[in-house]
Length: 134
Image 1 (cartoon, rainbow, N blue to C red):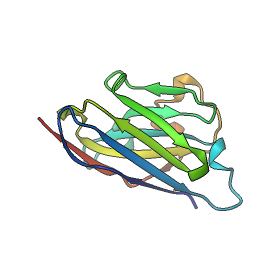
Image 2: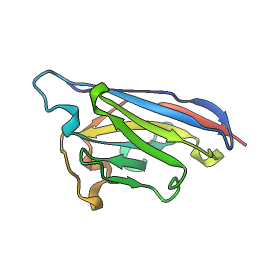
Image 3: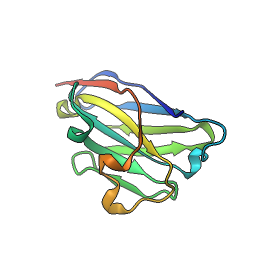
């Protein structure tokens, strides 16, 4: 059983910052999270996973990929000792308003071409709402 729990969402003004966290819990016999690749996706409430936009991804080797819409504003990072994925969001815009989902897959290295594809990721959190007002 894999559980991903997001936190850190909320409301902010345009130009402000928020930091999202995603804590993963795994069964003891599963691959350690240090061997997992993880990502953040976002979308309007009620959207299917297929309709989500990937925000950023990171594999266990440290390779990262960002959506053009967030590049230079958002930073993805992880603390493998705490099984935690982060998304630092700076210079927030109203168009960043969305439900943000954490996703993970027990694959240590991802092809750059698949890092932004939702089907790459097998496990998903429930999402955390981010609302930015201008």
